[in-house]
Image (cartoon, one colour):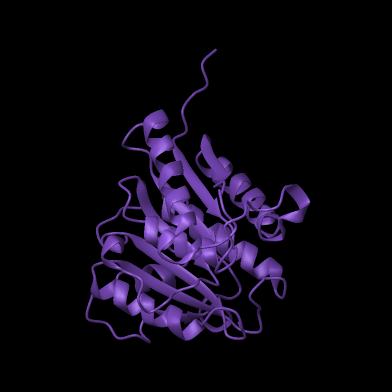
Amino acid sequence: MAQRPPSAAVLVLHGGRENGTEPPPPGPLNLPGIRMRPFVRAVDRAARAAVGNVLVTPVRYGHRGWNGDRADPFHDAVAALDTLREEAGDDLPVVLLGHSMGARAALRAAGHPLVRGVVGLAPWCPPEDPVAQLADRDIVLVHSDRDRLTSPRATRSLTARARSAGARTCMVTVRGGDHAMIRRASAWHRLTTGLVTGLLGSGSLPGPVGAALALPPTAGATEGTLDLDLDLGPLRTRASSTRAGVPDAS
């Protein structure tokens, strides 16, 4: 019997290094990949319970690092999206979930026709990175205020730049967290699961996130920046919102 194509997909992109042309280490030696496994499991359970036939799968990298202008993981993400498009058609809604370097790759690949939104965890957001490809996409970036490897300030700046370029954006600050998302791990997992399923249209986004995504392009850099504990905690799904013309049932 032919396998039924998925009704939606989540592509997961783990972190990496600034430079490194060697392949990622295999299996349990690939620590950035291992760190994303709890997110894959949590999102898979929630999405399948809400929608049914949802594909949640990691993107395989050919190289360990970003590698300057080569932007290797970005091209890996696009190749994975192209494969999905060939297999499932042009109408498959996809959310990209990335951590650190993987979030940078997800943001760069968000212009692909299948992509509906991006959830970026502790993202690497250099100020020179483009944002035009994020227009008409839902972008939620989550960052610890104590991250020492990637910059929360740069994430806030990209959130505002992307909104000015026509994206629907929100930033959530996790106080007391860390780059590896080990501190307050359960909060990272719960928040991410709710954001991904909400962006897929298979659940309701937290109310303040929906309100932030609906801000006008002229909103300032600090607008749409939420505090996990003050604005979203405890993590209960609130009334669903229609995201600037994108209905919840996508």
